[in-house]
Image (cartoon, rainbow, N blue to C red; front, side, top):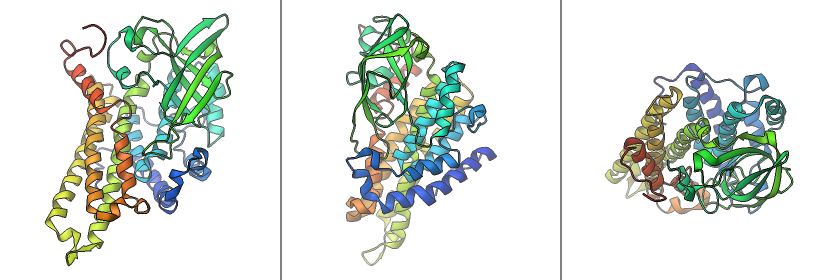
Length: 412
């Protein structure tokens, strides 16, 4: 494995080693021995309970939960970096399982920052008590997804899901889709327009929605190409009522969500990297064992060239990832642009790594039971997660040239 440990704290390395053991002993054996499981059309039966049970036992399911409620406290000076290192390890085993864990961390951190104390006392103990308790963050809609990641504030970009205050309740109507953990979560953070025409950052609120809330339903599990051990879902809200105190941030919710979004970009890059590392590791083993043309593949110049490219791309992604992680933890001015750079670059570079892996495996690379094509499928998902590659490039330009970059929506 290619790994640079320079500059990582003892805490981060300890968490990495615990996670690596979990991945090697539980996740990889499960996904290799049960490769058909991801194709089950019964989403609730794809992943055995034991995986989340063990993740809970070793403490990685509840990272982000405040220490006073039983979570494991991470050093705030390196929290994002630690999340990145751990999520890479889990994704090396399976990126869908990594996404399940990542949503727990990111939403827990968000709730840690915006949840009123009386609601923290209700929900954090519930999260800690049940190893299968999952969290979901509901922003994307059928008619509006990546465009909402762009930094513009025009009415055309506002959410179609709307919340209206009526007496002592908020009434919410709308639909969300492509939501990580959406199919089987127990608790949701839902974004809705509360001031139509005010713009995204001035008229969007977020709400805490338990799964059993009347008027809330899960419409379906979105059957994805890769990452299939995370059950992506579509939700519907029909005159759904929540108490006034379940509005966590009124009107300016998106300005308060940086604790979710910025680490989220880092973690997307790190999950992506984990897929690339696994593809590289499996390919290295294969080319040292497989004989073609009278000699092992590693002896062929064409193989050497591809391996060199794969290793270089992995090291480049990791270097940018570490730089961006440290910028987020330090709340540096360039954190935003670096987050987007690593998300964009990792998605393109790792897909190329996995393409090399498939091709170096020849016909075996196309076999479902061999496991290499799965990594290529998984890598392809990252072109569209947390914003498409093109939209992410728009954001990078917006960060670099805020005064001159285009608006990309509304009247210019």
